[in-house]
Image (cartoon, rainbow, N blue to C red; front, side, top):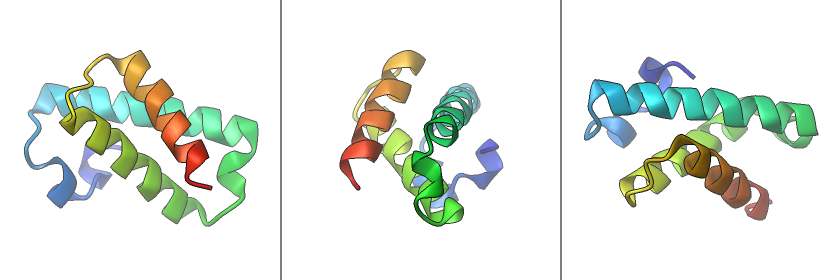
Length: 81
């Protein structure tokens, strides 16, 4: 999800470098969800938005390590089913 596709209301407090990291984390996590088959269980647009929101919320809580962001977001996404 390019940074421009994150809803602006979610990411307006992040600088360009952080947005780049969030975008990379999102793409990695999304690819993993697709590979696992989880992402096909619901509307893809809705799933992408849920994943993006999860990543942004974790980043707002201070998690900045890309691997941690990805892993925590995937865990949260999986628990929300």
